Length: 311
Image 1 (cartoon, rainbow, N blue to C red):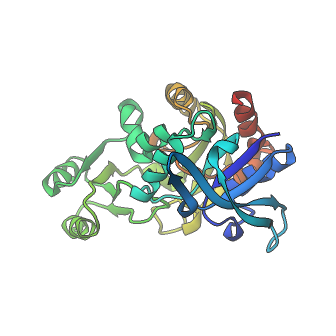
Image 2: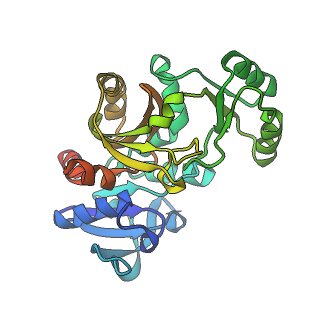
């Protein structure tokens, strides 16, 4: 039996039919592991010890009654065999700080995914290591640089570099005069660069989420945008569909898999549109439950088998 802690957003509020953290907890419990949950703001470094104040839990697949809590207690993270880093982005300084604290207990306590490389592998930046696999991309805060990129490619997507969930994603088609206004808007919010990519028309056929476990692809779902929508994220109306992997997608997985495996990224979701890699999601990837329903596989068990082999 493993003692397992989940660092995550409040488990009592998750959608048990969609949330990957819930599914991972459910499978862990089935395998005899004990569960403890805490939120990121309950993580503390105190005189050399990293602790978390949280509660032991049991989970069950019953809507409105899916979790039962024990009393609050404060425990050193070193008392756990595994800690899951599963809070949702934004990938801000609060998120980054938790990776530094978790790094102090890893690998004696196995943190999944490895917090050092989660911090250094942001979703939209890790893909830059694989330029042959990605669509034309620029990262810049300078407006002239963004304008030059748009002049070269005409139809582009522009979005926050550290955004998530499809928030702040804009398509600028030829003739759209909003680039300067969007740049002004984003520049007033933070000091981060923007990322722009050539628009891929194949997104109308779907944005494929491929799940990799310890560097190996285990399946995919296709997320089709709603009518009139550029974004395919399911919480903004994207429709999940059953789909397999193409030869090109297997080549992409083979190219990036060793980097993920060698750097402790056990559970990863990548996004592929029309054979082009657009994101590598290592912070809090989703898609386990949809893939299990479509393919009849126990993806959560594959994840736990990979973890148990390391423990």
